[in-house]
Image 1 (tube, one colour):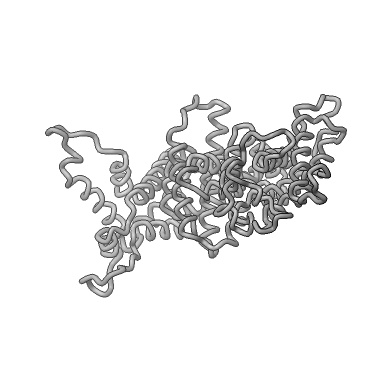
Image 2 (cartoon, one colour):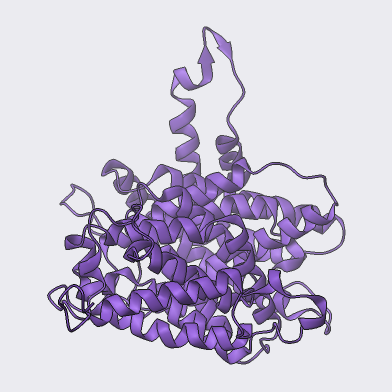
Length: 479
């Protein structure tokens, strides 16, 4: 510094050197600090890093974002810390502290007790990391628009998070935290902190959903497969006001999740991996229903029902069983995750919610946006026809709704032959059959007629071809 004629170094540049040094300690585990002590240092430095990221771009002394240029993540001299690489590696070390894997690979069996990270430091690390990953707060919201390297840093942070070993360590950590969560209590701080980290990753993917759609679907699959995580996820979104861009991002991510579920490889029936995967998909169905219900009752109604049903159609067919539904008998020693899952699936099988889903998707209470030459008081079937005429019904959502409840009724009828599921079947069948004076059956038959009257969809060069599965579900639910 003296040779260059300077008498003062900007604190943000000093901070970069400290962040890089701390990452080296975590990577090489060469220092004398124990992992718990190193995690505490990481949390302390994260406070300064957060202050540097949130500082205005005009603040040359504190702002880290003003150091992010178009040359960030490029090869530089060893004595000149690159701000992009330094922050990326520091966040990776902070994630290891949050998941309790910091320095685990360097510990010997004799030192395993000293390699543990306290719950307090792990929780603090997860909270600091979620704040650092909130890219919308960088430079007061200006970084992603005006700092050339900020958007690239956000993309690098997301790509690093979805790497298999990091996503697996996060899932293992939060599954262990959920296991220690009492039934009737609020989610522990550890669960909330790890959930906040996952939601921060998801927000990074929502920054550019069209290019990050595959990563968003992978994150959703990992998040929703953890039991009882629907409520902590919903709490992170309830305080936000819904935006059209957020609704579009949710739709794209859910459609990608449905594609991943449908294209996942088949496993041997009855194997341990197959059972684990089926339970993960069942928990995903419950968490997604709880997340949808929670956001509908808050000011953030950004989760659309149509894409939710597209995912639920796959999950209901592959994983949801009649024994998991409310109304079926269960023992007093049933595990807590299954008790919560039964409560979450109320959104799927309860008559009140079934009526609401059919009314919304089929347009049974649709109000025309333009004047139509029709009676003032329209029946539900008439409103459905007006909605179709005005192109207000998404065809994929209608097909997903029918697929979901056709599969559910088929499973309940199969369970009835084994002597169970009578109450669930009668409740579902009666609520659909008598809904709006029986107009649901007319709506379903109208869709079947619309398909069958199109000769091209039935005949091919004069030869009949099999009906697609979607129409078979329409026919089965109508019957």
